[in-house]
Length: 73
Image (tube, rainbow, N blue to C red; front, side, top):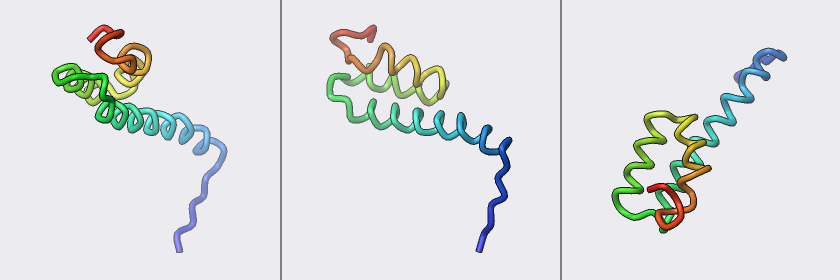
């Protein structure tokens, strides 16, 4: 049986790390399944999200979620 000893500092550090990981995975899945993005736009957004996970995910949420008709792509 594995016992984890997490103190206040560890919990405070794990919060942002877990939120960033969830945001990163959400953006990747949303980008892949977004039917509004076409071909090269989808590939470009995936590259942006993969290269700069936190900033790329935030930019995707702000600009890229709307799709190619309304967004920058």
